[in-house]
Image (cartoon, rainbow, N blue to C red; front, side, top):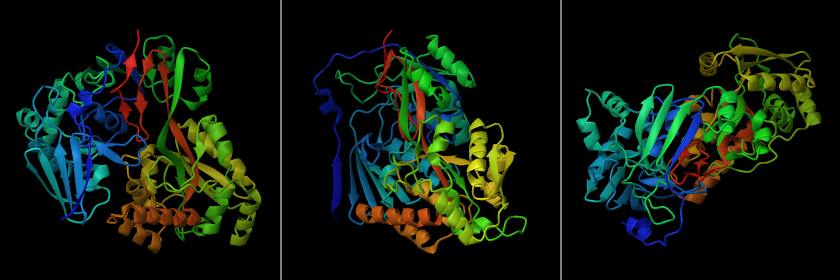
Length: 527
């Protein structure tokens, strides 16, 4: 059996790199909009938890800088058999958990078996192709039930991070969940091999990471990362207060800066205002069913009407009033441009009111037809979107009315189909297009994000892509899916937004990835 092999840089090779002067030490104070509840690779299901996993735990593989491939992590090399059903990984020598205990193949087996257990993890389906995990010394072998083109990406995803089997064996509790909670509450080194370990936690108030002195990755000076002694997080839900504390020098960084404040902070010489590229898209599902939930005819069942709504929506104007210019129109109908295999269909439904009017007339939609936009109560952005669309679509003779609901009700309406159009958003969790495309377009997953849209060719292409091991063939399958989806227009395609983080000028090297992960490995702070 032939194998394709990728080799990584070993710890020894990294140690041989020439040393350079490097800022080290200090604690970075970070103001968060929301706090973590449980940072465990398999249980993290909220962004405030997911985005912190990588600071405490490492994965066998790591996402590449451009997000389009993977590279070695805890595994210094990996091989995929020609039939796509066997993955072989060679673990780095000398990797230790934060308590100084060695990482072994048994820890990998334990971690991946946890991650693929549907009784434990909501993310188990991402590893559904794995039949068995085995280890012989530093060699780990995954046997798959079928070829899986996503498996390498999944081994670089937060839910497959490696945990210490010994730490779980020793933890108090009768169940895996109990043991995980006990480990998190203990705030001591041991369970992860990431650049930091959790060393302090006060629910809803603060959290502390301390540097892992046993970390295996090397910095520019030839010494082990991280450069920081630690990171102190404070939970500051109010946007204005986070900014005031940054400006006062009480914190070094503040996340989720309102776009209305970006220009102001860009002009502040004491602030380094960063707009990190993201996979976050803002869109609105359109109910495509022949009838509405009340039994009345649904004008949006006609694709010409959905196309008209897209042509009549001035995305640049929306970006101006909602994002204050800090965004860009969606150029792929199914994913952000930072996503692997994203097609560039820009302009995607460029503003064309005459074309929109012609499509509405062709579809026979009567003037005064009422359409309901369901929005999130209390959301200033949603309120602005409604006001703008009400004016834009009024030019088509449509009467747009608003229905304001809480988030749980909006989700329930999406699942039941009791809506015309509603606001929504998405951020990728994995570095593969299958997740977002499955959510937005593949009918069996979620009725094409609740729209009820179904296309046999699209569904067949998605199913073929799930086992297509030829990268170019798979790229072509996703390209065709994007063409089909763009023409059908089951969404109002709006815009992509960046992650807005304001840093003090003393901070360098902090990064937020397109998936949202907060990376402090190479961050420094100069006092």
